[in-house]
Amino acid sequence: MIYSIKLTCIRSHGTSCVTVFQSVRQMASKKEKAKKPRPEELAFLLNFARGRLRLGELHLREAELLIKRNDTPNACAHAAYYAMHHCAAAALYLEGKTGKSGMVVESHEHVLQHYAKLVEGEIAPLSETAEWLNQARALRVKADYGMVNGGATREDAHESWVNAVTFFKLFHERWTLDMPADEMENLSLTHKLKKQTKE
Image (cartoon, rainbow, N blue to C red; front, side, top):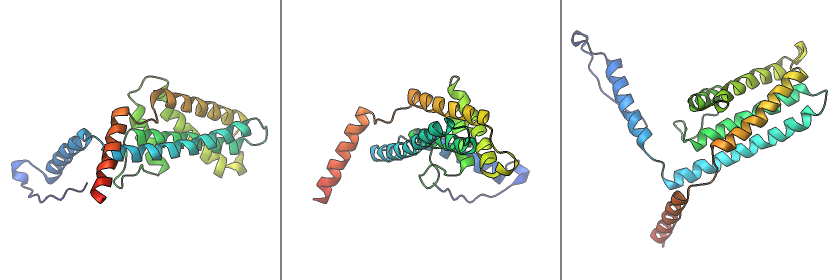
């Protein structure tokens, strides 16, 4: 949502444009937070969350296969990170944390930042998963771009894989991919009304 505001700065009154603009944005932010997603929006977010989680599960299985080998720590570190990255993105979708376009930010940095804010108030070990994601990301960069200088060790890769497995376990304990019964009923009603309108 874009807010266009014409402001007049009268510094002698001690009020600046920045202060007024921030106040307006804060008010708008509170209104947006209070707004409950419509059933069709909730279904959209759930579908994308499921998709991201499936991608994460594929990477998690790859990491599990790779950790059993003694010669692929870099590939394992890569897969373990992407497993957690997609899982974190799924959590953001389920919480309705979307960007201006209605999509969760795809930037690795932004997913990490938003996810860290999401779990900072949670009880450990869920509150620690953002740090695991951050560590896995650093190891993935080392594995992908620092192979000439040694890359990831087997011990590092194993720790990242263990964290990824726990990451998914905690995700399923905290979030559900099923739409609430009342929202499902509302969604069905919305579809019926749209169909009747078209007819």
